[in-house]
Length: 78
Image (tube, rainbow, N blue to C red; front, side, top):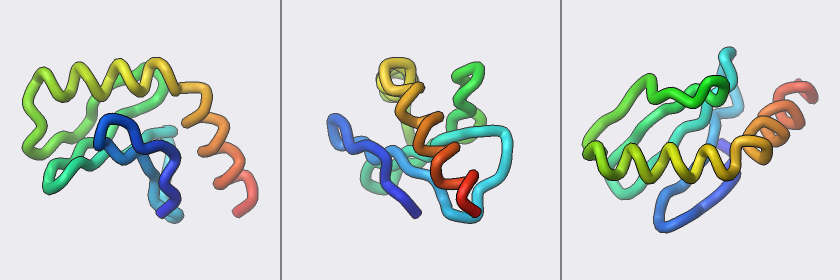
């Protein structure tokens, strides 16, 4: 499960056996979420409040190219 970024205590990662569409998992403590990368949309969330989800979305927006590049590097080599 490659970690792509840790920012403000949020860990952004994907699982090695993940599937399309391109998406990123996020965790902080016992909270988890999953966002599609294009368009950036939350598709699953557990325990994050709406303010935290907005913060996560902003981090994803600012790092979307990094996440997409890392996704493609990882899954194109499978």
